[in-house]
Image 1 (tube, one colour):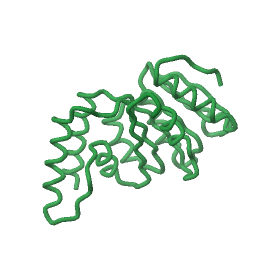
Image 2: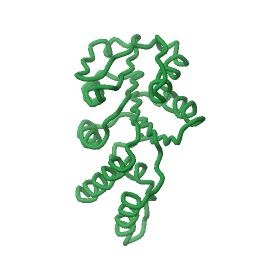
Image 3: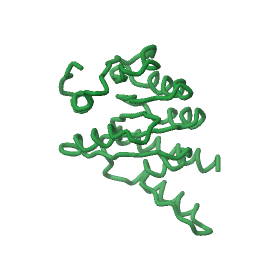
Length: 195
């Protein structure tokens, strides 16, 4: 399994190098979060966007989504996966310009592995459990210097984030429409709505 994971990481890096999609990571430890879906719907109006929901603890499923692969349950399924991954990585003419990752409860090892690939332009953190705060700080530190991290000002554990490169903007949990507009405008390179 580690070989397949490494192989899919390499194919995903080729996709990212060729197409350079803008990446948004939305993080929340609670399943009732609709922020990623709302941002997706807003961006879908004018952009080629893909929403990648990773509710599992397996980073391979995220790579399957990035590469648009189907999980095959045949004895030779892994051969088909390898062929499909290479085809997608090297021969895909079209790929979404914006990828939204809705990450929930990812173990630390998987976050580290994903961050080898993802260089997010924006991150949005809604509700985070204290036990996972370290993982979300790693994501915030990975946001590019021209990027932005949106933090929930109503959450005590999000007030001490130190992003090395990115700007930080705080939002109120009762103003999610304004948050959505700010994220969309930032990704579309328009202007900020002050929160």
